[in-house]
View 1 (cartoon, rainbow, N blue to C red):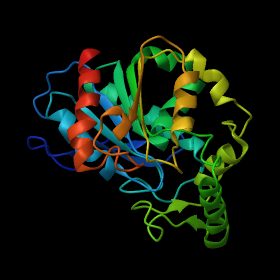
View 2 (view 1 turned 120 degrees about the horizontal axis):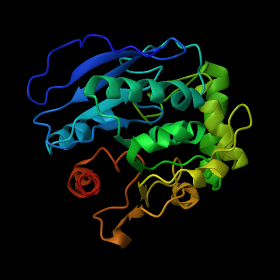
View 3 (view 1 turned 90 degrees about the vertical axis):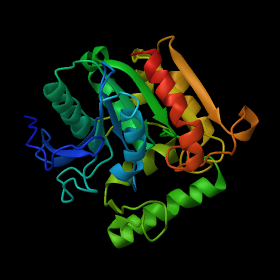
Length: 296
């Protein structure tokens, strides 16, 4: 049973307000609201990927809140202000437990049943895993925007294979994946979470621990989709991986954006800079805002 507790602090303008959410498997998550003068009828739920936390989504959430959206940032298990000691240290748990708990809480608090979802990297995959597993949830999604989200193509280059191999060995030896020491993000990953993602990319198959085939199910997901991929994101979310996810999704309201100089952008965006950089603030955030506005 999902519960939404009393906020830790009162909002002041666009100051974030934190709530606590409990998942079906008993993990307490942080859910942070960014809301000013809300003029848009559809709330936006944002989340991050691995080696990361709410900080990477917070500035985008604040920007969208400044344009009238009621924004909620989900901090996934094992990081940030969410519970760090967790019973299900798998990548899939993000989609099976964390996402549905957050969506239920936002709906309960706002009274709004239909939501926008915005996910960076593994956050986009978490949303997709939830929608793939729970067909009834698709009707409650007005649109899904994903930035640098892929699950199968990180091992298709020598550099990608070396990255995956190093991560696998580091997790085995250290008991965690060292994000901070390797400067890939502010969080270390608990043992087990990345192991699934490594397997998916080595095998080029996105399957659950029970054999559930996510890629085969994506054509059934026909929600409006915006997919952004960075030309400079060569190892974590290479363009071909993001495109594979995009092409597999069903529906006709789908927009693909390749973020690089060849497409008129000021840089070939890398994995983090596609959401968290001054240039992204100028070039990427307004595109996401306009896409949401058009479907509000």
